[in-house]
Amino acid sequence: MPAEAWKAMWARPSNALWLRLCAWGNVIGDRVTFGLLKGVDLSGGTILDLGCGHARTTMAIMHRFGARSLTGVDFCEEALESVKRRRGDLAVRTIHSDLMSLDLDERFDLVFSAYVAEHFWGDLRLPAIQQHARFAKEGGHVLIIVPGPSFLSRAVNAACNTPSGINQVNFTRVEINNLFTRAGLRVVGTRNLLFGSTLYTLGRKVKPSG
Image 1: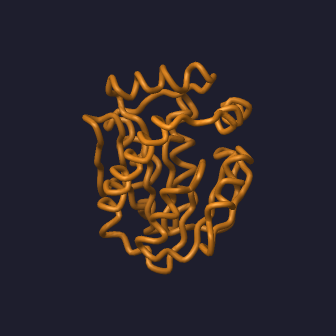
Image 2: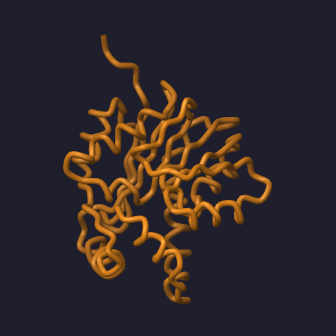
């Protein structure tokens, strides 16, 4: 995905209506996210946010569940600057990297991404999910949020992303569940919003058999 397209998106002023819609979506989305994570012990834990953007959701998870630290990764420097402005006194560090070339020794209790994996398709789709699983501790969790196949999600993509040169291929629930399994993740919870417009999938990293 061209970095220039994302930089242009970050530089574009947002109108008041769009900000209100985003705020509403964030509130509803947080309820779904928190519900999925209800049975996950993140107290004192570590979070990795891949393609973090503002890292708003993962900072909200830190507050809600008492995580110790957050690492935000993005290939857009403007996004990382936004994280630095918003983190306050939270233990948040940023890394400038794209998803597929990221290489860290550390493993995390929760690996998270929202609206990232849909920008990988074809032969890159499974490696993108495997990259999430790679950075989770054994027994740790991966939570991925992606657009589903509904008409609404396709319309939003056509109206907001395509004109900016940002391409995506939406997921079906069967596909994301299958990719989790192939990446060594056992699906422990799924949710959707607006009749499948947004899919939430939580998996737990399992020890390879044999």
